[in-house]
Length: 134
Image (cartoon, rainbow, N blue to C red; front, side, top):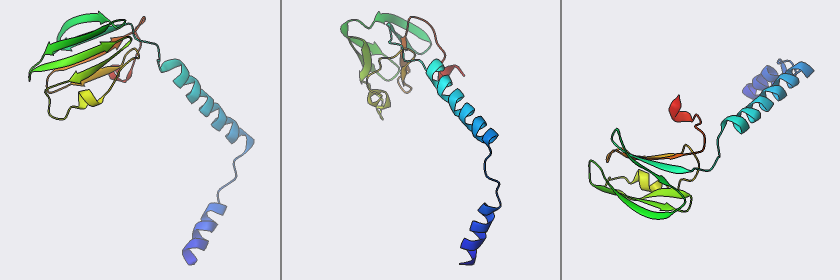
């Protein structure tokens, strides 16, 4: 019982937030919301760029239905394009993280098969920053 009284007494010693404190809190929350809305890109992707190692193998339009087979370090990866979205359909890597990534459809999304050294990247009408750029 003593510890509950001590904790309660400890919190009672804190001053209550004033009007200025609430203004700072609301202003900060507003800036966070505005930052996410302006900096987080959800523009649709226009093209697909496929890389094997450091080499760009090609760029493809997403407005088609096509299955591509790309040779990597471990074997062949199958990449599927379907009307504005793309995914790794199959890859020879052990854990299949690239396959589990699922469909990508927004600009600047990327899926990478590290063991097979193949990556797919979606690009939009304009270049934008993402977490990979930092």
